[in-house]
Length: 271
Image (cartoon, rainbow, N blue to C red; front, side, top):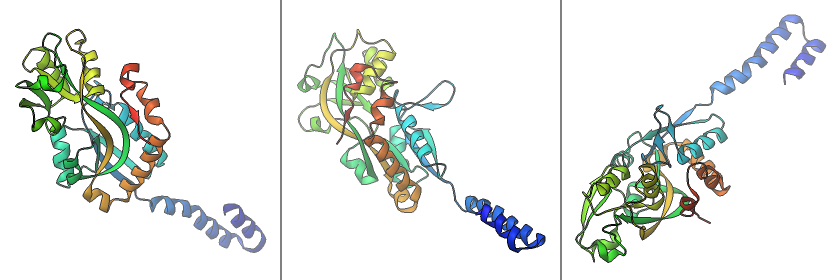
């Protein structure tokens, strides 16, 4: 367009008309750029290495943040993603009450679908019971009358509630639960296999912990709050790009940087 304007100036217009035309053309990109509003999407993630965590530098790192930053790049500056590390109970409270939090990533449970909207299926993974070698839980019946640590709003086991009597000790993080297991303040810890086994390795509990017992398989989803889904086009655009990235196989590529070969076996892609 600029070239055409210059040619027109040279062929037909006087100098003052040419100058006015050029100024008009040069102003158009600025007007177009300024007319695009940058939308911000607030995403709350659990403090759960290696999926999402805050490094000593203060930077939020992990598998989910890396995938979300890829999405932000693919959206080419039209959406800004702000990530916060937030406890499970607070995520559910903020998303359910339509506050500033727009999206999160966590496993699917029917009661969560009443608070927020599942948007993208990411992968399938087992949830397990971890116990001590000296007092192992080899099957679910061994939980009878045991004390099991689990996240607030998180990794309970509804399949056991009607048939096995056990005590639930609610904790704010899986690390807290594992340290309680290490100190014999609980008999077992319930939660996602990948996260628990990663934490076991990080704090050197491999020789203390018995083989895990699987109690449930779950799908992990990208979720949005109901209000954000109805009011923000940015949420829908983020969802579409995130779905493309997951279907491209990017999850496994990013996860290889953080997970051992044994842990990667628990990341089951979804069709």
